[in-house]
Image 1 (cartoon, rainbow, N blue to C red):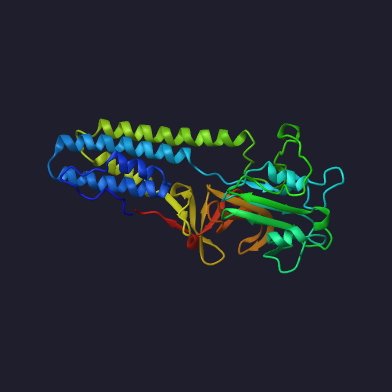
Image 2: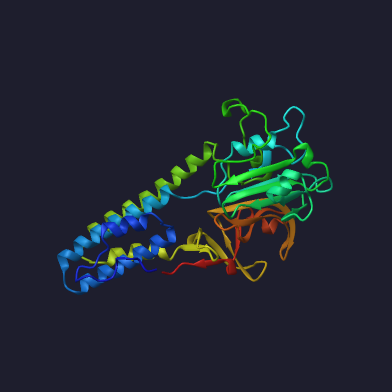
Length: 367
């Protein structure tokens, strides 16, 4: 990765604070690692030139800058959420008591890229279609953009814009079984809607699907999400602070060695989505690399991050019948593999709660 302003300018080569601030404005974890590596190489150049005291100072500054960049990354981390449309037991015709349930639900939910919509319904009685704005307004069911009818339809949001959905059954759209969401805007779905009550008077949108589908991320309104995020931040910050002080204390005897150790700890443990470079797992979480995916070898992980877990289904695999749920990249929506929810054979029980990520869909980062 080429960073403007980091080309040699004399013997003391280190990025200026101006360049660092510009870099912070559009930083991902992958870019931070590349940036960290670049700084290490620049420090090595300074050390080779024999500037011992200056190299020591630059090393200390470099670690502090890396810590700052990582903290910024944590603060801007994007989480994925899966929403059950309307927070109802099923996608269907609204009741007479609440005819605008989908419009109200859309208004008070702020969806972003990486989130997903879950439509639940009896497949023999209903369906979901994505349509254009014009078809949405006229309840025109012809030539839909997308047609889903499996009863557990998952729509991954991979871009900003306006999205329109309605039932694929004739007559249902006219009875307000339709949904309009706005991603990256102020919110939609309010056309031809009566005055909606204030958010405080609306029923709490509890993620009821959490108990139905197992390990699905809670909605942002839940108190669990901030707690999980805070715990993650504390762990990362603690690790970085320990590494920082360890490097500073050992710098005089082993110039540059501690920095290289910290580099190895970070770089060698990352797996990312091959499509968008979104961090999805750590190398320490690999249980086995000898599994079979849909299109080749698959790795079994104990944990995965920045992914969305889809609805569960029974699937016949090479090792027997399992209940699994597809796993999607939180950033680009790519199907990376699946999660084992239940194993029917006793010998396969160890897989429950684990993830299969396909080798062709992930990449190990080696900057």
